[in-house]
Every structure is written in structure tokens, then in C-alpha cells.
Length: 189
Ligand SMILES: *[C@@H]1O[C@H](CO)[C@@H](O)[C@H](O)[C@H]1NC(C)=O
Ligand SMILES: *[C@@H]1O[C@H](CO)[C@@H](O)[C@H](O)[C@H]1NC(C)=O
Ligand SMILES: *[C@@H]1O[C@H](CO)[C@@H](O)[C@H](O)[C@H]1NC(C)=O
Ligand SMILES: *[C@@H]1O[C@H](CO)[C@@H](O)[C@H](O)[C@H]1NC(C)=O
Image (cartoon, rainbow, N blue to C red; front, side, top):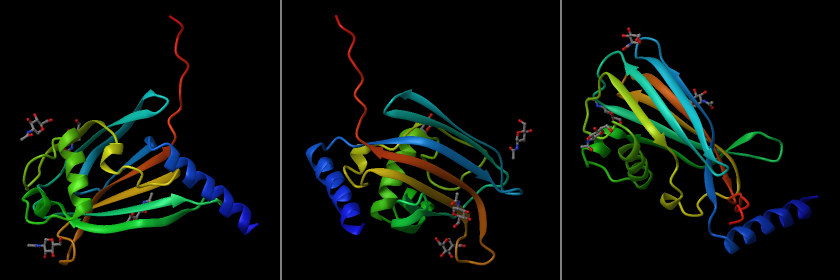
């Protein structure tokens, strides 16, 4: 039993090495507002083709945030359909990243994604309406980082993390499929 699983896994790994063009397709997205801190959270996906979907995200902050931290956790779905922790579980101070007071590798990737797609592109504080448009996980930022499979990426947003009373102000969960691109038949000319 174990050896069969191992062979399947190895085949996947080998094929992934043959074809470096694994794509990360967004499958689902959930946004969570925390009463008293955030409101009107809305997250929607739009499929562009078989291999790509983009997200539209909106939220209103009740009060300005001055010292935002996020916990970024990644889980991979296993053979029994349970999500198991996968490599990444970090807490990053977003205000320090935006002010270039810290340079953590995952932080810089998150920052690149935020700057490309959202109005989350200036230094702290943040207030009012935050949004992202046509957001996706750019494969070129993590080439071949994720083996084929379904991932859950959980972003928990906090104000004044580790300094009581720290508060949980909201959350975003992305479900992402790492897959070989689906080739569509070309129309005959
Ligand atoms: C949420 O949306 C309603 C209706 O547009 C608006 O009146 C309210 O101020 C919004 N909440 C926040 C915290 O901005
Ligand atoms: C930040 O994002 C907003 C909305 O996309 C855009 O209008 C603005 O020009 C951006 N600012 C910077 C400094 O990139
Ligand atoms: C995301 O993480 C937060 C904090 O650990 C947890 O409360 C929440 O249940 C998680 N959400 C999902 C969908 O796993
Ligand atoms: C800001 O957040 C960091 C955690 O990222 C925490 O250590 C620090 O105490 C907070 N600063 C203030 C002024 O609350």
C-alpha cells in the first residue's frame, strides 16, 4: 500500500519536473469580517478560463488600523481529504513590511501581490474601504514551490499582535489548485 502511494507521488514529482508550467488556480475564496472591526466583507471569484480565476475582494474597516500583523498558514489536502499543515506558518507585521522595516521572504511575496492588485499599497495606517481587483497567485512568484494538489491558504488579520489586548480584525481563506495547465483544443483556421 505504501509503495503504491510512493510511486504515484514520485510520478507526480517527475512529471512536474518534465513540465515546469504548473499553474495555481483559485478554486474558492472566503472572507470573514469581525463585528466591531470590519464590515461589508465581500469576496468573489471570476473564472477567466480553465486555468485561471481572479478574485474581487472588498471590506470596510470600522476604525483605522495602525499596527497590522497577519498570520499566513498553508495547508495541503491529503489522501483522506483532510487539510494538513504544509511548510508555511508565519506571522508578519504588515506595517513594518510596507515601511520597509522588515524584509521577510514570504512577506515580500505577499507585499508584491498586495501592491499589484489592491489599494493596500501605502504605509500604515489603513482606514475605510480596502479592496483588491482581479487578484490571483502569480506562478512566477513561487515557481514549482507547490506540488500538485489542493491547498488552503489562511490569512488571519490582527491589530497589535502579541500586545494585549490584540484583536483579530478579519480573515481571508484562499483555496488554490496546483495543477498542470489544461490544454484547450485550438479552433481550426
Ligand atoms: C457597510 O455598508 C453600509 C451600506 O453601504 C454602510 O452604510 C456602512 O457604513 C458600511 N460599514 C462600514 C464600517 O463602513
Ligand atoms: C494604490 O492603489 C490605488 C488603487 O488601485 C491606485 O489608484 C494608486 O495609484 C496606487 N498608489 C500607488 C502609490 O501605487
Ligand atoms: C484560519 O485561521 C484562523 C486562526 O488560526 C482560524 O480561527 C480559522 O478557523 C481558520 N480558517 C479556516 C477556514 O481554516
Ligand atoms: C505592533 O505589533 C507587533 C507584532 O507584530 C508587536 O510586537 C508590537 O508590540 C505592536 N506595537 C504596538 C505599539 O502595539
